[in-house]
Image (tube, rainbow, N blue to C red; front, side, top):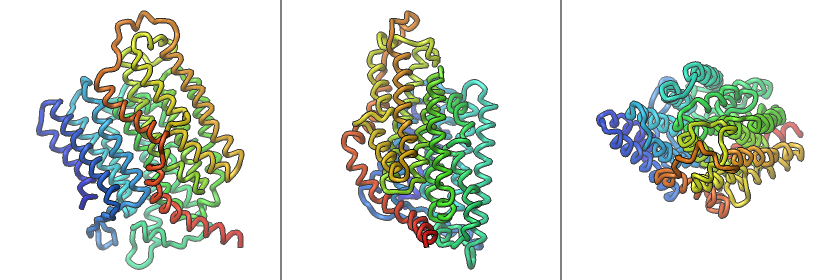
Length: 488
């Protein structure tokens, strides 16, 4: 029952928001809902007990409403419910339109994301997968920036196309299940699909998840969407929704079509590492701070996708740790982007400089987050990327060198951007701007604390990742069996 509460609480709270007119009351209720969900998630971790929920749904097709979690689901649930309180908080002092509708859409998105990560049934997974698109579409369309209609339409078309690929794959797998048919993941995992079928079915499913992450060359919707999106919109997209693609790939590809994964492994890793270098180079050439961070996010997600397909202990451990690290870091970065834009009325790097003279505390906070983003030792990013690159090295030294470019190029463009924003001579255009406010501290200090704690002492989180690692090893059994068959 606790899983059903975690799933429905944000959505039901969102509906109650329409009973109130005061923006302050609406925001407090929305924040309270996200905090309660975070506490319930912590309870799941502490209790360390199973909490499955199952009810008959569409019995004639063997489809049940099944909720549950394993180690991987728990990591995604932690990330989602950790970040949404900060996403709600980030809108507390802004003069927003239609506050009730906006916060309802944000909570609706949270519920749909939780549904994706808790669904034990592929059909239910797909329902929640599609539901995430509805509130995000309206958040982008109604609260986005310049050219939001055209850019939102492009985002919608890309995402819907990926969803159609996923739907086709689920229907095909459903037809293969014996007896009454079933869309439970447990039934899909037991399928014995011919290897030649797996080689084309892999791309049907992978494209759906590659668009959502996104990875090269399915990324073209991302930079413009991130740049146009509102602060809360881009936090949701970059912090959590990109992880849907990673989670979907882990849930569908490895246990269901292991031979397809093995057949295309090297090509996918090459595509992902190409995306790492491509996005890093493009990021360095950006003059707009928000676009720079958008390409930076793509580079890190591409490295995480490469780690996923490296399929060894170090890479998968680094992947799961980096899921949390990247989500926290990118949310902090985009929040800082909004602060800078509010203070300076620009995001163009050539128009900035010398901001530290007028906002020294902002300069310190930005530096700490930037150091986490470039994977400096003693930050969470370093631990995750070190494990990922170690895992890639076990597969190929060239893969490791290419993956390591994320750290090198990331340090170059992020520190260069920091220099252009904060350092240099005093800029008289900024002499009347204010420094960090109380709310900014409330949001940024906990996020920075997570970045530093995971970097200085990651062992408690690595222990928490122990269960996901067991799950990952179970997912890898079909892949390892496929390898053994080929060797024989």
